Length: 454
Image (cartoon, rainbow, N blue to C red; front, side):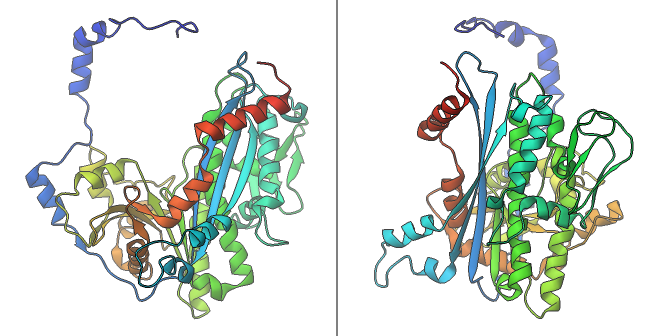
């Protein structure tokens, strides 16, 4: 670790280059690589013609999120506040189709501006490194309180008396959440049993309050002295997925007919990682129940999908671009993932068993663009782990969604960014926090209200 302003040696790399142990280590690594011409052709032969749906959704909702961590002072760079912004963009497909005036190839800028005005951004502020929120005993306890407050706030609800993200968290767990250990002291006395009337429970051992949102376990990544930006990112990931579930739950309760004609797009895979990962199971069951409920009412189930911009699967898909025919797709089963993406043997024990609630597909549209599309698993649970690993990649289970998802991508894809669709690009524009001027303004805001001196 250098001193402030100290520069690295120009020859500091020489020892690594000359070290035979480093060379031996690198030779022993297995990794994803560019396919040869013969391998690429063999993989491309496994792709199938991409199906088409019957009709496009009437309304599309897309989400994206962005984190930012900010030191309160240049004198104390390790003392930080975390910001998270989740953006939801919704638009009527008739309005989207009317962006281009008849007889013209130009987009109406006033209609585009209307889409931006309809975007809803939900902002969260969290205590980061070395900050004890509201006089909490530790940084971790203050962080837990802040997470509970932020996810219980009315701004996370939709409608005048809508449910909040905290309410959704309870609902998808069946209205009851149990935590065995105290999130503050780690004591194992009587389990903490949360419901709608008991969202905060005092620990009989340490007298600290346990919150229903502690079940996400994000606080476990908090250190009283270290960098807590990773915990802020985990919070962002969970908040984005739970906000989308909150919107869908609100529509289930208020207008199931409208829900049937809607599509929802999440930026990234349908998965939760790190400490909040276990929430993926109740989310999976929730979306399966929603689809079953809408089908029972005589309507087509709503479309939910995740679109990945980057990551292993997208890197692999782009490496295949020159081999793939336009208008083709393939399901990414565990054997395929292990052989071509993970750089190792197939994960027979069900890839993503602890994290994923959706199946990935690679799509190359008729226009030649590559997408990685996630569709929720059409099952209520993952019982019989080995059997589930096979069932999840059976394309016949996804017939109600796959053609509609591909059609929507075909309709919304555009050239401004690689593998981009309009709603995700709009959502990212509203969710992203640029370093300048966005980050700079947050710096000023933090320093002003924390009362710090440069």
